[in-house]
Image (tube, rainbow, N blue to C red; front, side):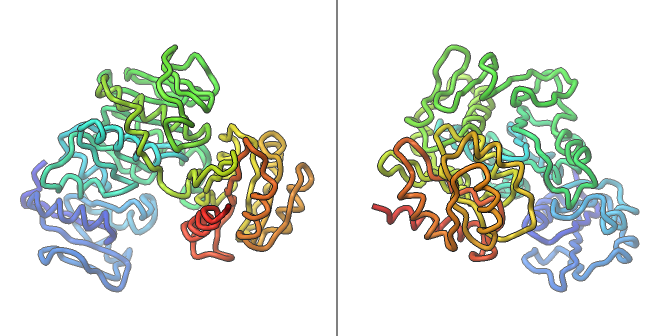
Amino acid sequence: MSLSNKIVAILGAGRSGRAAAALALREGATVHVYDQAAEISGFASRVILHPATSEAEGASVTSDILIISPGIDTYGPLVKAFAKHTGLLTGETEFAWNYFHGCTIAITGTNGKTTTTEIISHLLNTNGISCVPCGNYGMPLAEVVMMEKPPKVISLEVSSFQLETIHRFKPEVAVWLNFAPDHMDRYPDVESYFRAKFRIFENLDADSTIVIRHGEKLPTCPATVIHFSTETPSASWFSEGHTIFHGEEKVLAIEKDTCLRGLHNAENIMASIAAVRTLYKELDIVTPFKDYVPPPHRCELIRTLDGVEYLNDSKATNLHALESALRSQVRPVILIAGGKDKGLDYTSVLPLLQQKALATVTFGQIAHPLGALFSQVIPTQIVTTLEEAADYAHKTAPRGSCVLLSPGTSSFDQFSGYEHRGNTFRNIINQLK
């Protein structure tokens, strides 16, 4: 797609906007960048910058292509104003994908996208096949396209925001991990959020492959479908949480061969292996997991001490993430939960606590109301700090159990963010004796 003598307007001056601008310049376009911030920097001198932009300015802008950053509401008034006089409205991911000539494995889902994106990249690179994790995680795709030597494969995490603006996007492999309500501050209802994510299947054909959790809704299309499951043994890929099976073949012993834990990570592993084997049948699967370290704060195994596993799931800043972490555990749980009081109703987690947990420890601003609720169904200790919570859990956790920090709310009562909270927990656990 030649952009010679074309005018490209980019809405959003963040990293994806800078990457899209650089690629548009390379392809010969005249590039304008608009942002509501008072100042814009970090662009090549040939890029024409428009800080403090407004709807009124947008309505007067004429462009051949309008590229919007994923953080900007596709259906909001600002985009509508800029779209009045453009030939094509698209996003940075779709725009850059048109200039990528390798294979695309695209990953979406409400939870697990980042871990799966990383695992796919690690599996391929360890086997000598160049792959870059990018998109909603890692580098913007436009940066990958601009590399001196682009990879053979991209492991592309795609969010619903990025999928809103696709046109021709057609990955060789589309991975659908799961779906649950999210981003209700952006979408008017759950169905709108679902439709945005479901667009990942829109352009697939008989040469495409779908890797999808068994039981999820499938599109009507001619693509090959591969199922994975932790509930249905007849699925192509199955795990009960300890072993990965492909049919009758035992592919991986999770606790022996990896530092990943939980049924949700078993699903991430199965989806990743199924995706890469679609493109490359003969891959060493076991060796890459020996040195794979997952993204921190996502059911991260910190250590095993006296037969007890300690997991850092500080990224669980909402109720759904807490429920997902609990549901995925295959060991009895001592749950550490709490943090900022966001006014959430945790009643729905009580049946899971009865099923999965031996006890709970609550801390932080929400410690008392959360502890009072949890104590209705399970022994609960209420403390003030994360240090006190970890100390109590350490003293009470029996051999064969796991201590799980999965707060279920944000960290801003006592920490600067979930990373700070998770790093503090890791430091506490590593000092235990």
